[in-house]
Length: 353
Ligand code: ADP
Image 1 (cartoon, rainbow, N blue to C red):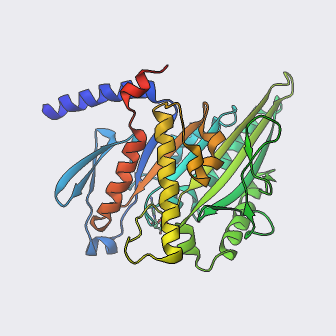
Image 2 (cartoon, rainbow, N blue to C red):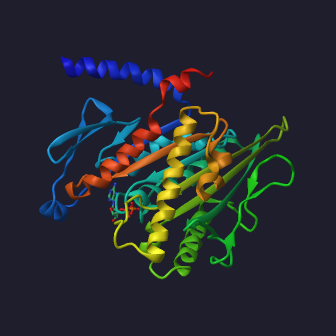
């Protein structure tokens, strides 16, 4: 009975938060484990069949409970995950800016969720397909233009993945038109005419990402990969225009690189990753708590996404977790990050409108 009372109280508290928290959601997806993994390790994550927003992790036998906006268990399919995010994605057709981040340690399923695997695409490809089908339904009243850019941030350096020279470093600048908006000179934007174009563009992005580094696996686990989709619309009868942006980000692995032992470039990498991930956490937390000052400038990633994170934009943090005992430490860190991002200081938020 105590559990039930506690759950009811938490629900009530949660509903109050929903009213205050605005457009930031934090989901968690737990990746499946193979039999081979279970032979050497054990599963420490369990779910509540009556509540799809909680997850329990047993840390050395001690149960830890985490509450998020939604939890996807290992059996959740790519379709099921996409179903939960598709309304967010289509809102960029209506002129909203949207960011979806995959966060978690290397091997927790970030790339699986965002890029997917052959014959089972993830959010990136499904999002573009959905945008095409939605805009075709709005024709001929509306005419839309969809462009795609791909970039990566590695050691706080921004690179273009769809241009001729992936080693070129790009800068973020303020538009000279006085709007205060940011732009990246030299970042290639490709207009996508059809669903068929998508695979070619993703292929080019992959080739460019691979050519600029020596070990792709290591490199991609330490860099943020960004897919930026702009959707501009024009109503042929009323002349009304819309402009929305969808940012899909596969973040660098959140694992703490052993403090001792990391030297030189590895230490610098670790510092850059930690800096940008904690800067992102600070920004999302500040936005969700409706704080007056949002610290966008503390990392290249948050600065680049400033326009897409502020105003009435919509953000989803998809926290990926491995349920294995040997990953407990990193899973707890990721879930604590999720809770920190999600928590609103009620007093701070309630004081403002
Ligand atoms: P990350 O991008 O976080 O480093 P990956 O996406 O590469 O992790 O996932 C690690 C491995 O686990 C990959 O082989 C991937 O295909 C597999 N995997 C992750 N999540 C799932 C899932 N939900 N279903 C099936 N396989 C998954």
